[in-house]
Every structure is written in structure tokens, then in C-alpha cells.
Image (cartoon, rainbow, N blue to C red):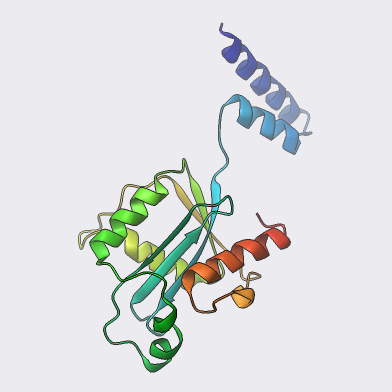
Length: 182
């Protein structure tokens, strides 16, 4: 038995003993996770801008509090008046077509073993799901395992540039840290 196998066996044995005694602690779980080399999913904060409620996606941002960020913009040829006045002027990137958007998103997400995408509104998750479905037959992008959380207590009201997806996602990541959600 190798040293790693022995450590794994000992961690599992201790965890099982704790389960039998009904005294499982967070430390027991963390020790077993470390022995099994299981990484916790990376938390990413999402925000989207769209052309009126249920309108087409305009921009999507994902922010990793450790630093890497994803932000892309899709074309919006006929914005509703509010979007024309409040969103279009503050898009940080030029628009790209959906195929390039999907490729960029998939490439960016593949840096992670697994992720939890945290949103302040279910619409953000809906738009993300729409993007990763890659064809009319239900095909979807090859991505790492993904889970979703909707955290209505988050508010991007402290965004440096309100209604810009990247700045709103950054604001949610900062607020989550303040609320100790991340």
C-alpha cells in the first residue's frame, strides 16, 4: 500500500467512525475531501443585461473573486428605449456573434474543475443556460460540472457602473464577501 493510499484509507476510516458515532464534523469532511483530492467548486458571480425583460441577451459577465473575469457582448440591433439609454452606452466590449461568444465562454470556463454560478436573479441563470445550449437539437457546450445558486440577498446596487454586467457581477462578488457568502 502506497503512502497516499494509506492516508486515504485512514481518512476514510476516521470519517466512517465519525458517521457511526454521529459526530461528523466539518473538519472530518474536509480531511476526507483532502485525502480524496476533491476540490471545492469555484464560486463565480454572474450578471446579464438583456433587451427588456425576456428580451434577447446583450451581455454576460462571470467574476471569479480570485481574479479571472469573463465579459462578452452580443449584437443588439433594436434596443428598447430604456436599454438604448441605460445599457448600450456603457458596454465595455464590441459585440461578437453568438458562436464566438459560446467558444469564448466555454474556453474560459474550462480553466475550472467545477463551478458554482451565483446569481442575484433567476433571469441570469436562464440567459446563461440559453447560451450554453448550442443547437436546435439540444446539444450543449462541453463544460466542467456546473451548479447554480440564486442569492436574492445580493444586490448590485453598489455597482460602479450600474447596468453594466461586468460591474454588476463584480459588485455582487464584493457584497457576497461582505455577507460571508463566498
